[in-house]
Amino acid sequence: MQKTMTIGSSLIHHEKVSSTNSVATSLISSGKPAEGTVITASFQESGRGQTGNSWESEAGKNLLMSVILYPIMIRPEDQFVISQMVSLAVTDLVRTMVSEVSVKWPNDIYAGDDKIAGILIENSVMGETLCSTVAGIGLNVNQKVFLSGAPNPASLAQLTGREFDLKAIRNELINLMDVRYKMVVNFAHEKLSEDYHRLLYRGGEWHRYSDAEGEFTGMIERVRSSGLITIRRKNGRIKDYAFKEVDYIF
Image (cartoon, rainbow, N blue to C red; front, top):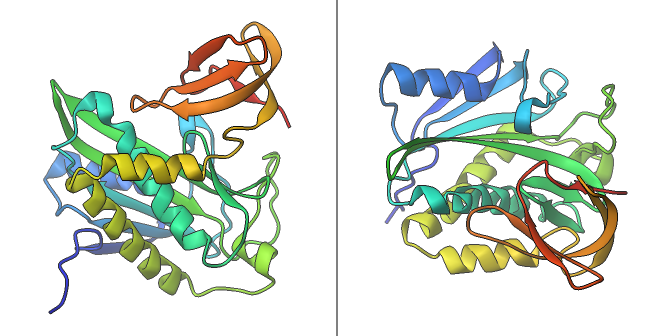
């Protein structure tokens, strides 16, 4: 008996778009596309990352994908579980090909100390309901040269020495994301959190960070369901940070 999948219920491909997240958002505003609709593109003219950052991607070389979800079962204060779910799905995929894969809070995917994928989650909240989510994913697959000022990009091709079929990569990610999304729908949130923390970049280790007060040595203890990260300093002080309130020092 064939299993019913949510992610990948509809596939839409464009050769060129401003960004796949923008296309997905436009589809939601003009109607209600099926949950699990996947939008991909060969090239993004204005690929976006977190808080307005840009995303470099050579045309036809990488996986550029957005997924439309309606996670109305999730309370707005728990919406970070969506970010965990997407991060884990991408990590599940990348770990089949390269080693030392981790999730750098909130949802960058790292291979060693290099960034191989970025994720942009855009939620729409109305009152106490998480109405819709657009989950954008940029996975560096076959690009071998990066020209932007990004400090540490890497691709599957660079790390493995071989090229990959983008459609096969897309299909596998769809399958893995569907498995992880079923965990969200079935409220296996504790398991998602455990898996996320197990793969958390720098989790439980002493490293250098900086915040509004300056540089310090700290240890990431956990990421709360709200998405805030908790860092303990060597003097015992514990503080929660929102995204962009603390920087990693390499």
